[in-house]
Length: 273
Image 1 (cartoon, rainbow, N blue to C red):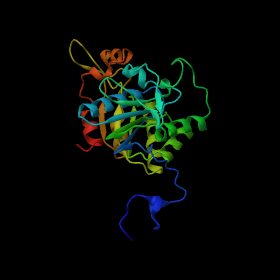
Image 2: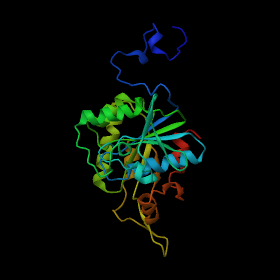
Image 3: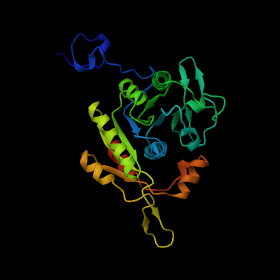
Image 4: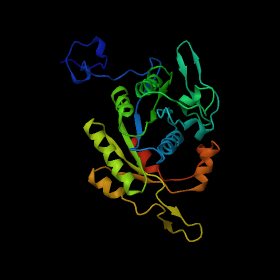
């Protein structure tokens, strides 16, 4: 077998990358992404979009060309978090992503609809097709890393996305409640069955720090995240507290100004620094 050129269309060899049943789509012809990281959760409401955004901000602070693909079609929140209100534009090459104040490229359904309040009442295949189009039709340019804010759950849409986009690995977001930990186990099991690498777990709303004494208060009960991490032999990448300032920053579109080191280890691990 000769040296692989990674151009499967011109290759006569039989190899794993040339399986006819592969559903992987190619990124836009005028784009490239060195690393694609999916941010997932077993259920909605645990802060998946927040974690995606924080990771992108930290990557950008390292000087990396960074993008966010907002795959949560029915609940897109990435533009709001970054204070991006403009409509997406297009040219002869394809759809153009919007850019945040620090230069993070983003694409979200909220950049394409008339109003962010309009509900998306679509069936699963249409939603999955839209996420794929964000990958194939958006002119991302040359990226060091792309973070995908995945749809919540382990159903049809996340499955289709995993099969269509060459994700290098995922980060699973959870919160301290025992019920959520059970659902996280399902998300990790799904990743194992699909042979998708798991970078680790991030726990959001982990604790509230008392402003007077500095004591950490477990608002949602004792965390079970360490036990889940040990069970599936994946690292705990970070724990994000309940911080009113962080919530205000998201509401006002000023997340890029946040000051916190909760996910520094996570970024260093997934980006190989």
